[in-house]
Structures are given as structure tokens and as C-alpha cells.
Amino acid sequence: MSGAARDFTGYAGQPPAMRWPNGAGLAVSIVVNVEEGAELSLGAGDDRNEHIYEAVERVEGTRDLCMESHFEYGPRAGWPRIRDALSDRDLPATLNACGRALEATPWIAAQAVQDGYEVSAHGWRWERHVGMDNARERAAIARTVATITRTAGTPPLGWHTRSATSERTRDLLIEQGGFLYDSNAYNDDIPYLVDTAHGAHVVLPYAFDTNDMRFYNGGGFVFAEDFSRYCIAAFDRLLAEAEQAPRMLSIGLHTRIIGRPARIGGLEAFLDHAVRHDDVWFATRAEIAHAWRSAVGLPEWTPRPCPKGFALRGSV
Image (tube, rainbow, N blue to C red; front, top):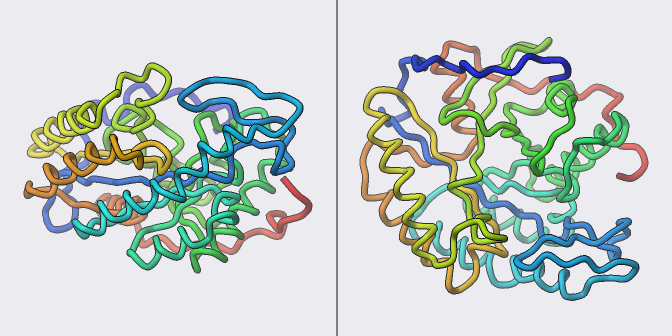
């Protein structure tokens, strides 16, 4: 990514003429972010506490037990509600998990695999990679891959950094050899390819608008219906456009956010609306990336051996 020119053109209104599996025009990706236990915390040995939640408050110099309790809600109460909502409708999802979060809650990885989810990587800690030096970022990637491989049983195929990446993040993921795709972009409604020294790499753009994060800090969502109405509007528009060209919709969830009792109904209402429609393919992000490669005529993706330089050394 370093030194790369920005691309404002994309497909210029002419994406590849393809259909998703089963002839669908719209691919729907449900992403369950698991970050709880990976937030910054003096109690976990970090140099500061996380301060962004429904209320923004900094506690410095000592553990923030209030913030820790807020994050604990996700695994304890939110995750079971989200899991039930998806299982009741027999829908797949991508678990976008921080490595340290799965160290604290390994049963979530096990249950996700049991339900047929993909387990992808969301970094070691819930932190930005921008500003990291090369050695620290490489170690974070390696440590995350090792934990997900152990807790989920297979290495992650996808990566999504919390917001800002470094300029070398994508290069390091590709160098690592085991990543089919990354979601470190927000610039389109369909996947696209980037050329690398190791061949084409799939980018699956993510979205912050069809995302329960908008319940926080003036994001515009207050009631469960705010989430469902907005996501249904995006779904209906993309489904209509998919009659002419392929489209992808990402729905971003967090166990500590949409998992609250007054919010979970918004997810359920959206899912009930979406499953009633034909021409829709619910899929994991890895499935979408594989399908995109196949549709544009690329050979089947296989991981490359991880270089020795990516062996985990020290701590992050």
C-alpha cells in the first residue's frame, strides 16, 4: 500500500458481469465483531485504558472497572442473543475476532465453528495499526493468526484492522501468505482486486453505516427500529441494483452493542425481511472472496507457506 495512488474510479459503473452462487445478485455478509477482552486495559498490561463506549470517559493511572464491566456484557449476554438470532434463521456469519478476545473467550470461537461461521482476524488487540513500526505490526499479525488457529481449529483467511491501518498492513498480510482477503477498505459495494507481488488479492469493502456502532456517540441509532429501517433500506436498494450488476451488503454487529435487549429486535427484524427475498446469497466473507475470484477467472486460491520472518517472537 505504501506510495500507492488513490483510486476514485473503481469499476467506473461497469463491474464484472457475474452472478453469485445460486444465481443470486446480492451477497449479504453478516459480521459479528468480537473485541471484548482485547480492548485497552491497564488490568491486561496495556499502557492505558479504553475510553470509548456509550459514554466517553478517561480513567488514568488505575484500572477502569466500569469500562471492563461494559465490555464483559458482550460475551455474557449479547453473544447468546446474536447467536440465537442467526441460528433460528439458519444463517452463516463471519466472526471477526481479535486474538486477545478469543484468548479470554475461547468458547465463542468453538461455538462459532460449531454453527458454521468463518472466524477471521480483527487484530491482536482492538487497536489501530497506523503508527506501528514494522516489527510490532508483524508480531501482532502472527500472534493473532496463532491464537485463531488454536481456538478455531483453522487459520483465519481474512483480516480487518480496527479503522486505520498502517501503510504496510496489506503488504504484510500478503507476505504472511495465509490471507485470502482483507476488509481494510470502505470504498465500494462489491469486492475488487489489487495487484501484488504474489498475484491478485481480494478486498471486501466493509461498511460503517449498516453497522450497530451507530448506536454510540451520536451515530443516529437510538431504537432497534433505527437499525432495522436503515439496514432494510440499504438491502432493498442494493437488491434492486443487483438486477443489473452484482452487489454486496455488509452488516456489522458487536456483541456488546446489538446484543442489548432493546436492540436485538432490530437485527431480528432485518433478518426476517432479508430472508423472505429471492436473489440473495447469505455467505461468509471467505465464501464471497472465493466466489469473486472464480467469477473473474482467477485460479482457486491456496495459501502460501508463512515466511520464517513471521515466526512469533516476543510480545505485542
